[in-house]
Amino acid sequence: MKENIISHNYQVSKTDRQEKNNHTSFLIWFTGLSGSGKSTIANVVEQELYKLGVKTYTLDGDNIRKGINSDLTFAPEDRTENIRRIAEIGNLMVDAGLVTLAAFVSPYKKDRENIKNIVKDVNFVEVYINTSVEECERRDVKGLYKKARAGEIKNMTGISAPYEAPENPDIEIKTEEKTVEEAVHDIMNFIKPKLKYSDE
Ligand SMILES: Nc1ncnc2c1ncn2[C@@H]1O[C@H](COP(=O)(O)OS(=O)(=O)O)[C@@H](OP(=O)(O)O)[C@H]1O
Ligand SMILES: Nc1ncnc2c1ncn2[C@@H]1O[C@H](COP(=O)(O)OP(=O)(O)O)[C@@H](O)[C@H]1O
Image (cartoon, rainbow, N blue to C red; front, side):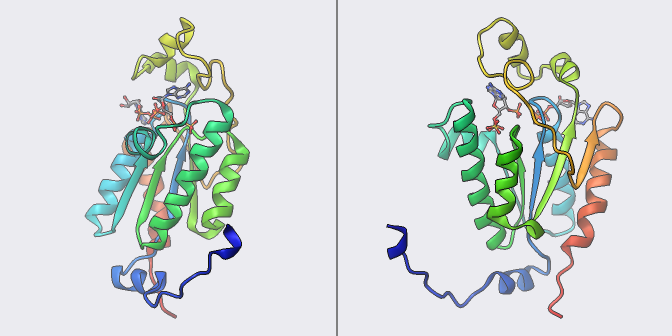
């Protein structure tokens, strides 16, 4: 029962960890269609952060949907639970002092709003990887669009399930107009000032 869970007061705080790392910690959330470029861009952003000496970790389908969330499908209520658990994990990682990257389709606005409630607005950077479904289908990196068109996959985002685009993302990247390098440059420009730790 939740009311019987009483918090212990740990002496090493998030602030202590940030001070030791000499950078702040926050969650960079990439949302967009399958094949839009979330993983490709997140991967290079993480490399750039690594070069700066920033402690990072990336959450994506490989380490989440194959592991802790392997019980979840792509039905709307399971996607909601998928995103909720990832936000909770992201919150722990931010508390641990890491700049955490998360790359998930996360198609529902209310689920993305809930991430902000879990990690708090100030710790959350929303990056909308805006690629048209036509382009994602043309890329069809994993052959999923072909399967969805053939009726072999139900609930395919962009084809038979909705994608609710963010209205006010912190950063929007149109990958049909920008290279990966340009996208990473824009994202780094936004997050670099946020990394500065100050104990004032
Ligand atoms: N029905 C359906 N719709 C969308 N995506 C599908 C589907 N079935 C499997 N996949 C593959 O699973 C990846 C999306 O998982 P996510 O956890 O990011 O989805 S969600 O946020 O819960 O909507 C997604 O990975 P990415 O291509 O990296 O986005 C797909 O490869
Ligand atoms: N400007 C771009 N930004 C990101 N990816 C791009 C771009 N142009 C082409 N691509 C290609 O699109 C594909 C995106 O796949 P991926 O990163 O796996 O998408 P997601 O993680 O959103 O499913 C990759 O093959 C990548 O090389």
